[in-house]
Amino acid sequence: MNDEMLESVYQENLEERIIAYLAEVCDFSFEKAMDVYYSSKLSDKIYLGKNGIQYLDYKVLVQILLETERELLD
Image (cartoon, rainbow, N blue to C red; front, side, top):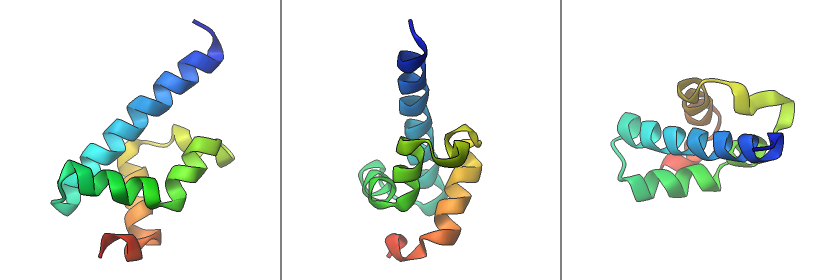
């Protein structure tokens, strides 16, 4: 397994944890949490690997999303 494949698997697992935790914290369905996450600027930053943000803990990332993109939660 090369570095690119490892990074891809890591990112997929991270996104799953973010979505599950977002659903739990906000009392959303998994589908609603997916919509919120994939509509967020945070998901783009994680996908692009901007500033190493993808290496933060998933709970921290959910807090960042809740604090910076509240409009997505309505």
